[in-house]
Image (cartoon, rainbow, N blue to C red):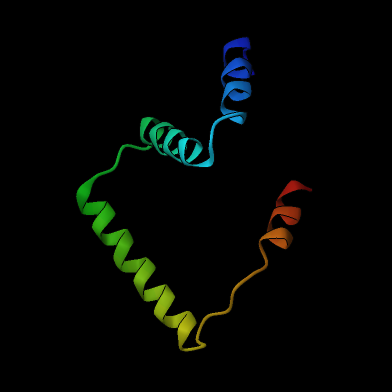
Length: 72
């Protein structure tokens, strides 16, 4: 990371949780601008997946296990 990024990360560490979330949202918007039509479709997919989980048709993976797999 560059010195600027290191400084920004250090400053972000001391922010209240709500400000961290707002910052993360703003940064994500810089690298992945939202398109209303895509966002609408993504919401539909999320709702369909949540319903499938509720019906027991889709299983969940433990986040720690997934992260461990991709860190190797």
